Amino acid sequence: MKNILRRQLKILKTAKMAHGEENILTLSLQMLLIVLLIFMSDNGYLTIFMPVAIIPGILFKSVRENIYFWVFISFMSCTFYLVRDLDGYVPNHKHVFAYVILMITISLLFKSKTNRLTFIKKQSKYIIGLIFLFALIGKILAPEFLNGSFFQFTNTTDPRFFGFSSLIGHVDFSLLKDNEQNLSMLLNTNNPGENFLLHGPDGIKMFGIIISYWTIFIEGMIAISFCMPSRFLIAKYRNIFLVTFILTTYPIATVTGFAIILTTLGFMQSIVENKFSWYSWFYLMVYILLPLNHFPFTRLLTMF
Image 1: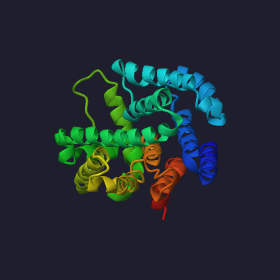
Image 2: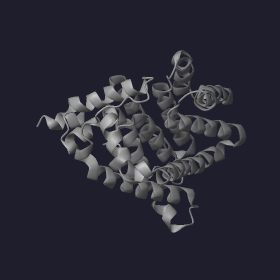
Image 3: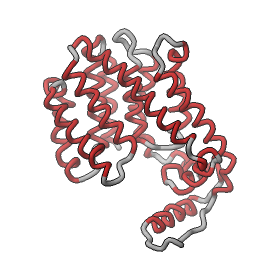
Image 4: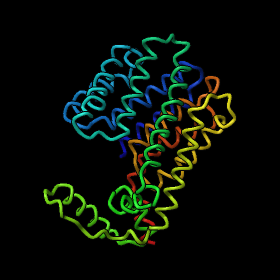
C-alpha cells in the first residue's frame, strides 16, 4: 500500500505543474497507466507482461504517446477482458478498462495532437453515462434489487461491505465471515439442495431498501446528465451527481477497481478550457486517496 500511495503522490506533484493541453493529456495517460499497472494482473500472462510494458510508458513520454504501445495494450486488454469474457467471468470494471484503453488508442490513431484531449474528454463523458445507463436498466429489471433483498444478501456475504454492515446492523464480524465461507462452499458444491443460514440480514433490512432506491435515483441522474448533450441544463450538473455518488458509495462499498477507473474518467471529462476545474481536483484527490480503502476504518470505529 505504501508503494501505491507513493505513486499516487507523484501524480499530485505532476498535477500542480500541469498547464495546457499537452501536460493535462500527459497526466491523464499517466493516471490511466498507473491504474493498469496496479489492477491489470488477473492472470500469469498479464502479471508478467504488463509491468514490462506499462512502466516505460509511465516514465517516458515517447513511449506513452507511441501508437504501437497502445495497440499492444489494447490487444492485451481486449483479449483478456472482452474476448475471454465469452468463456469465463470477468469483473465489470475490467470491461471498462478495455473500453478506455481503446478510446486512448483511437485518439492517437485518428486525432491530431490539438484534438486528442477534446476527444478523450467527450468520450470519457459518454463512457461514464453509458456505464450508469446499463447499470440502471439492470437494476430496474431485477425484482430482488427493487425489494431491497439484493443489498441484504450482498452486504452480509461480500467482504467489501462487512465493515459497514457490522457497524450499521450491529452484526458480529465473525458471523459475516461465516456467511462468506458458507456461500463459497455453496458455490462449489454439486448438491442442488444445499443451503445455509444467512446471519444478519434482518438488521439491515430497512437500510437495504433505502440504499436500493437511492442507488436507482443517483445512477439515473448520472446516466441522464452524462449522456445528454452539454446544451441541456441537466448536463451542467453532471459532476455534482457523480461527486455525490462517489461520496455516498465508496466509503461503504470499497470496490477500488471500479472506483479508480471511474475517477480517472471523471478527471478526464472535467477539464475546462485546458485547465483544472474544482471537480478535476476532487477526482484527482479521490484517485490518490483510494488506496486507503484497504484500511479497515469501520472496524477501527467499532473499537470505540
